[in-house]
Picture 1 (cartoon, protein in one colour):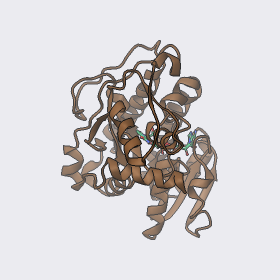
Picture 2 (cartoon, rainbow, N blue to C red; picture 1 turned 90 degrees about the vertical axis):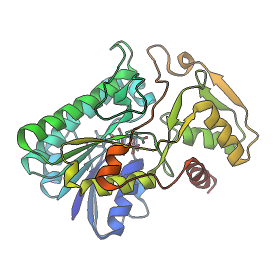
Picture 3 (spheres, rainbow, N blue to C red; picture 1 turned 120 degrees about the horizontal axis):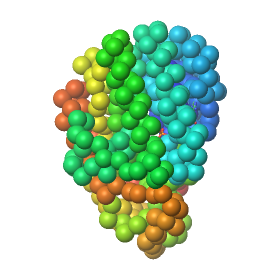
Length: 319
Ligand SMILES: NC(=O)c1ccc[n+]([C@@H]2O[C@H](COP(=O)([O-])OP(=O)(O)OC[C@H]3O[C@@H](n4cnc5c(N)ncnc54)[C@H](O)[C@@H]3O)[C@@H](O)[C@H]2O)c1
């Protein structure tokens, strides 16, 4: 099969590209190289079954041709990371909403199955943990820019579901929870690569807020395996599906675990959110997925734990 992967030079997209090529598929990547890097695909760059299109998902002509010529679409291209959303709000909203609208329009025109990656951010400040796909969402005011990411991604979900409802476009919406592993950069505020890099250098680990906020981290290899299976699961068409680990840890405890595991002399510092993100920032206290649905659909459960993640990320930075 020929897969189109928008955002294929990014962290998750590059891992999926590698996996699909390994199993004998053809892959076209469409990426504008904003947060993605050619370095992420350098080991497969000259693979005969890989085609790279450098451009934006907001370029209708490019998206049109790429979708016409493929069999199925993984749509990953997006403005990603809280820092980016806070720094470039207009561009980020445009990429997420306009870009996705264009991708869905052509997937629908050519009737190509499409898997769209959404985010756990759409649950917002909901405290109904673990988050159920059908649970209510609770988002903050429009004056706080961080909510733009959640709202824009939620709008993508609405558009995707509207196509499913009105034209039966085979579309799957996957709400990814924190995904981590080699190649993820700390540049845009991702916590584990930042902490591990600091720990290796014995530098201070800067925990935002009081450090009591919790997250669940899943190894990218587990996520890729889930994404591959979901694309071929007809029962997942027209569904919104959580994908992530349920191993919950506070940010302060995470910093401690990383310092111990890396064998570091780093100290842990608490830094107020305002100092890091300026005004207009709110955080969620807990973010834990309910993964019953994905388990029922494809029998998926994470195979790797937090220790595996820290070891793999540390190995990458050390090398
Ligand atoms: N990594 C996570 O923890 C996580 C969590 C929830 C959701 N997601 C979602 O998963 C997807 C992939 O995220 P990632 O972690 O690999 O991030 P990433 O930043 O590494 O990948 C995004 C890719 O999209 C590309 N891109 C951005 N704007 C584009 C545009 N206009 N046209 C073409 N390409 C464009 C970037 O260059 C990059 O290669 C995103 O949709 C993101 O919202 C990721």
